[in-house]
Image (cartoon, rainbow, N blue to C red; front, side):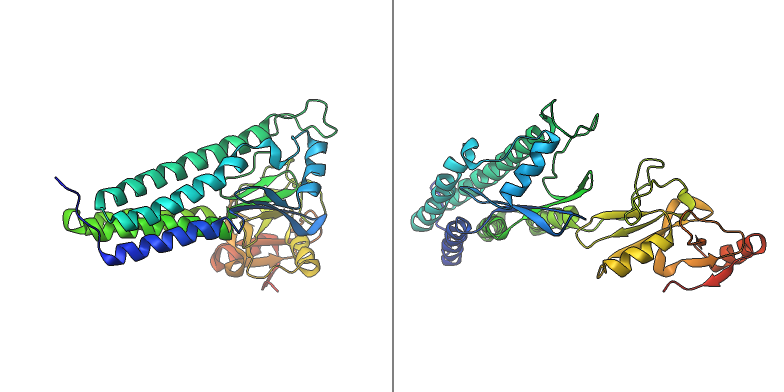
Length: 330
């Protein structure tokens, strides 16, 4: 049976897909941001279709100390072939618009999705090799430690926070895939259940939103994690607290005194603050809703002398023994 012709709107969508792909060649596809106290403005590695850019030299210097291989564009065959693959898909999108056959459109979408999956697998392999194949003679060695950056989202690597996310070119590439899916949906909707296909269509957005969304508090590793302000090892979990930035980086503190000092020196807008429940230290509660008891017999590591409770009744019951004063977080 002969393949049916596609609608004019699908042809316009295919032209838009081609333009998005061509435009992605002139912007970075991906970026990995690194931030640490010694780099308050942060470092960024930008991955283009044909090169590495950003703070490559500084990152290579850091990699040398911990035994990671240095990064050079010429070491990656992907930077040679990727521009041609993107141009190929851009040309094919225009060709399908001219041919105007529905079967060709579906084939293009399937090929594009397969290419995207293969690319992410290759990106993971690239990250894994660079994070695990370390020089045994490196100046800084942490037994059992690997430095594999995340494919997507946030990951703590020693004192660096690594945040990986698509850059402008990457979002254009994703948009091209979404537009292709839309064109296929418009052509095949009489033959599929709309609800199911709509769910498939929005899955990429759900995936990226979930992967990039800010995470909640993480467990404190006693006698291992350091306070983000005083750099002392956290030893008393009932006083621990955490600050989570909008990028998902987690800073841990040994008590509220250190958290307050940190915020005074380095204000963090829209950050989430959590504090350990004094009666159940494994559970963190939002600081803004916690009931705080200060003084009395409460003795915290760095002089904050403040305990947090999930409810007012818990705080009042503890007050009978601890003899502290109920206060508000300032």
